[in-house]
Length: 239
Image (tube, rainbow, N blue to C red; front, side, top):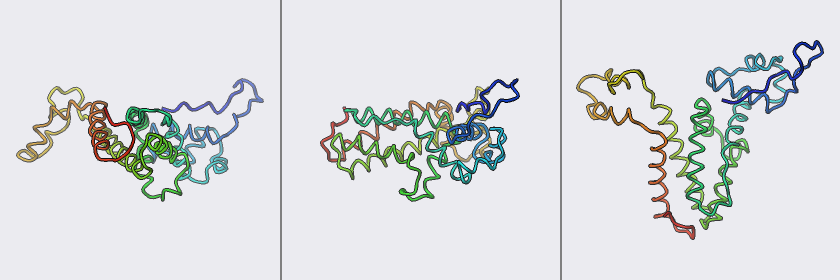
């Protein structure tokens, strides 16, 4: 969860204390904190102003509306997704990028829609610049490794198509009754009509043993093996 700087920096017993300077970074950090606790619907300009101890109208100098706030939050989170464009082992680097993306999704599950589904409503060139930097950096990594620009874009799309699906699946792996020892009861599968979904009910132990990190690695193995087998490039193949 994001650490939100305190709105006041002076001694609270000092009558002359003044609020800390209101900056875009402070506003976004506070907005992210609210979303982490209560989801996107819990964020309003009025509530954000109250959290910052400011008149909500002053926030509009830094963000014209809630949509701009959401774009800024997506940028702030994706800034943490570091891509080493000089890494000579493109497979290892993309694997680390994938792990980092998963960690960000688990740290900020309510932000995932801003990273996965919100961009669908915005043309690529109109999206916040910060959300495009991972794409640019991955293209730089891959073209530097010998891929053509078109193949580098294909790799990026395949990787993030998998990552988006993975984090959405992992965040949906909810346990209804954690204290139960019976997997059907733990997952709520006992609520399904008797006689229907026999395969799903039979997989209850496998579903209950879901390991998101292991599932990610297994999927990456399959993805990278397929990519290196089908794309023509001078890049070092997967070992």
